[in-house]
Image 1 (tube, rainbow, N blue to C red):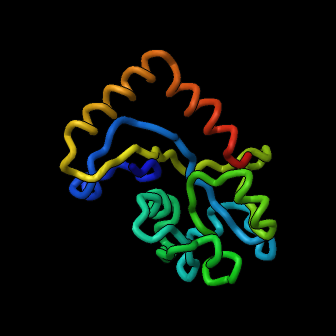
Image 2: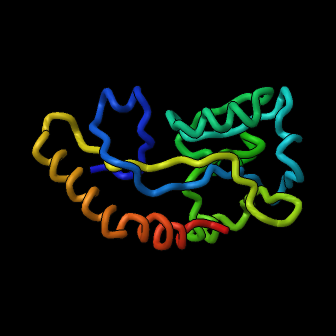
Length: 164
């Protein structure tokens, strides 16, 4: 079972998705060596914005930076640190990740709050061909959604791990 993939039509041809789980915010990550004051400064020809290879985050990046070049990579944060891209759009950026990468910063607005570029949702997914497990998983999620477990996990527990 996978939890981190966003349900897109292309992915749904490969795996079975169940419900909505684990919301995460798409944020802009940049190097402290090359500060970014405003996201608009990155929406220019010649600027390079990193995204995870194959990620649905690319749509969010294209919406905010249509003039920049998107660079897909297996590790966009490493590309930022190495100067191969000017910044990266990433989701589910945790406090632990930021502690492990002290040279990276998250773009903030004029009030000092995180500049949120978009919202993504990780979905539980399983390989096709196991309808019994798929039905069990749907029932489990429906039950825990009804009693509030899912809201707690998504709203309190999961969000407590995210960078702020």
